[in-house]
Length: 464
Image (cartoon, rainbow, N blue to C red; front, side):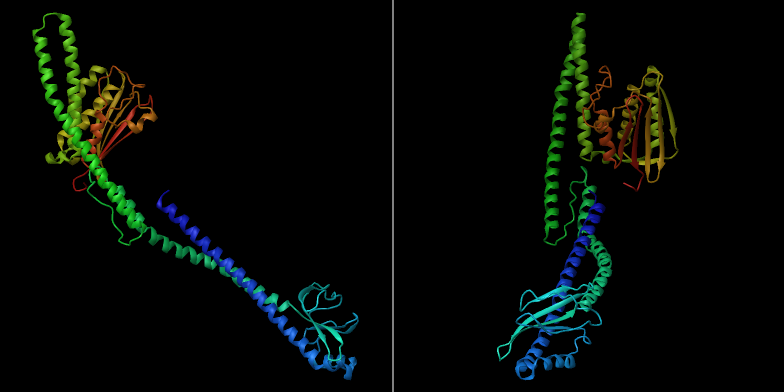
């Protein structure tokens, strides 16, 4: 997963989480507000019921029930105040019941099922009425059930406006969350991006470089420290491997030289033909082994940076032309044509002998694996800040499964190439090492039975 994808996921996650928290908070707030408004309305209705009980029903034995009914109509006028009042005697008969109000009609309101309770009643006209029930017993011993109710229309309207505002606020919160998340995630991932960029620039040739430290004391600093310690261990491992390769190659040169001399002496002194043939075959294997040792020693020196000691500026096109002329005879013997497409004055800086070795190895590789009648094209040109050299052949090509390994040491595609072709699988490995030592790269594009194209890119002077 790249950094941009991770940033997008974090922003979406942050915005979604913040929006979800906002929605849950608003739902809870609406519910709390509903409960508060309903509780306030219920308390108001109970206070009215208490007023009726204390001021009117307390003396009902003296004033009479008709007086109570008249006073309720005169003092409270439930129909005018959008309130509902119903007083029920102990035997279930109605002492007083409000008539239709402006916003609701209480007709058909079922009797209370439990005294001293509060409920929301759905009226036949589909209005909702919050009703409180209170039992009162007068000093004379008479019991009354006082029901006081009020419509919840105002509560629902208030909550509806709030819900609309909250719904309009969700996109705004989401937008703010995305913008804030972009800034926060960008700042949070900035050290990660810097570490990734620095890690991409560390190669085999600059293992002395280290990743930047954030000095924040958090996990990112710990990650940088851990990666830097890993780079130190990798540098030590590569250095040990390079020293071993160089030492082993150097130590093998002396016995191989001595063995070659001894075999040459035996050939000169041997009189029997079959002895000369067998010693000659052994001498050929010694020569082959000596070439492998020399190549491994050259690779180790390149990886150690020794190539820069002989750097100079030269024309890559002229070098490629002279090298192609030298190898033309080898191509003619096999019946392969070599053409050159060279741009003038493509000047690079490097070890001329090593760069010539790149041209020789690529042309030799193309000649080996191009059947008679095939063709090879060598081109050199300047492209932007790089010098580009390509060797394109019409040979047997490279299978797709083998392409990632063609530059590995000792790798050979035996199933696609003849065993009779000489080589140890180090030609392309040393090409890659030389290109890396010069700050360049080499790539291959090939398909089985369709030829190959090797592309070498080297920086122009001042771009290394």
